[in-house]
Length: 470
Image 1 (cartoon, rainbow, N blue to C red):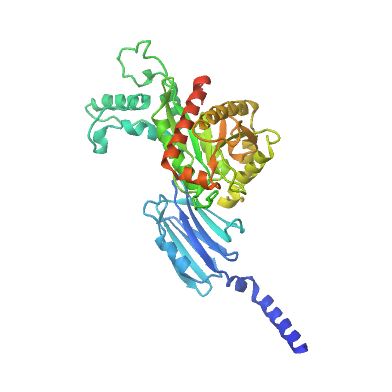
Image 2 (image 1 turned 180 degrees about the vertical axis):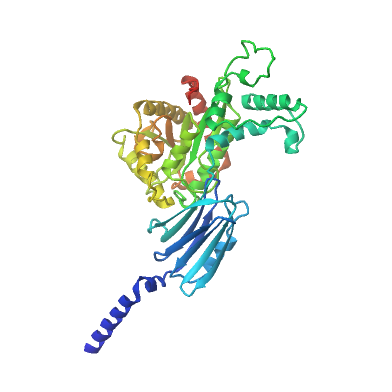
């Protein structure tokens, strides 16, 4: 007995003497994942214990070296090399090797300089310990610039793209302006030097909020009164919920919420881009157009940066029991939730940042969240009007869970100046509704219902002219 006690004490001293670095040697890599996106590319390393790393960025050629301490090279880490997609906007390739007896070195070859954010996440939901490397381009993509380029793209001269020439798109004021400018410039004997590019705000102001006279050549006759008008581009921000590390709810048949809502958002985007309201062209902007994660407050920031007129977040509901069914529409509440179910739903959706993985160490997170708390009574009033129109149309193609718009403190609805709603398309936890959500026919019906609701909202609430001082 005394001998056993002495042996246990000796073993305890041995463990303490090993120190943290030696104990970390037991960490094992469970899985590795790469999530490419235009905004940023994410590399996730999942292990059964916390791991420590040091990072070194080399500018030329751009690459990030990451030393993982207390780690042995295993099949999961080797798989990382083959997971890089050629289409990844930021990562050119990844190399891994056993750098020393206790360190694995990972070198991420980059397509351009990046600003890395590296942070750890504690176990949550199905995940163990995660080390996340978010690789942001130094030259960040401006969503408003992107939206304007998309709007201009169909009207770029076909010869410049090596395509057959064809007519300009109908009801495309930006396309007409660009085409006119191209014709004017091509008549010159020598190409004139390009003027400094205007800011995105100026371009939006000029192209979308002014009469077409600013593009006229000197000596051209002034436009008639009929021509002297402004086409108002209506921008709808569509927000497919979840994505990347966060699959959202998963149905009994394995259907993932993040996949279904992305499909619906893309269908709705195409319908919006082909539509107009009272002669005003429409354009949809997706907060994500592929399988990657975006923190909740960043979704709102994106909508505000493109000066969206509406924000529609698309989800697929889930509940504890498979009996729950029907679609719902939610708006923000400044006070208490309209029901216990609405409060529960908001709490569940607001946990997306924990599962998807947000860098809580960012210095400006507090400031950003404070800005997003500036919800106004006017925004909520408009959101309820939008929600009622959508709910009425959704009810014509499927069952409603509640006959009225519910309200709660959804973080993703806190844009103070954009009417915002969250649509729960159906209960993915219900086997019958999961099957409907997987059906392309139902997705199209739902898309048409959402489109009708948006158009009816604008027919009752015409968009105001844009402020030229923006």
